[in-house]
Image (cartoon, rainbow, N blue to C red; front, top):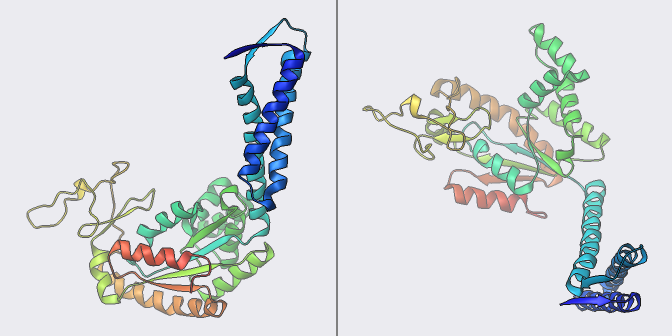
Length: 328
């Protein structure tokens, strides 16, 4: 209902609405939260007084304003204040609490390409690939990127120091504020120790190491049937997770031209080393390099093993359990 108010009447309305706002806040607050309730009431009163100064104290003719509109103005002031408090809490969390720094391990075909993006979405932190970071640093022309470009131009291998430097630069970006997932690094014990030293300088540390376990004899079928969407890293399999577009030929094998990404419709690809012959060598290297890294982090109580030789829902359930704070 529209009300025609004198200055005195409007002042009384402001007081009445502020009191109502306080009562509502207090009823929803525990004794330990009484300060917050009082703060809400103060903000509500402030909102009303701002409204009064703008609409009445300024030179104007008679004012007609509904009480609902006045409530809306005050509520916005309260909502803005609550949003500011939430943001302040988030900033404090990011500053003083440990970030979620996860290393994801698994042999070729274990499911990192399938579950990594799901972890990324669930936790709201980016999955960082050393290859992607290296290319981005070179393209951006950063100091570390220039060093990497010079080494690659000379046909050399990028050193651990350069890779760690690229990671150091990348994790300072805003999307890594609450943490990040490392995929493909560290690959050796020396790299793991270098990573630990760099994170310690930043006041951080690896908080979780998750290994996806699959018996070697199961991996050949997985690897040789795998197709990848290069840009996103999404992974498909001709038997276990085929793309919707897949068409098979008379020989029962997929027609290459039909292999398209479900989301973008772009062509999928098979990695040149996704063959049975290459797999034997890759698995040998993986086991010899990974075991020492897991043994390095095991005393910290942060290494979690996941049985990745089961249905996807079961794997995901174990991953969630492994990621939970205090998981044993």
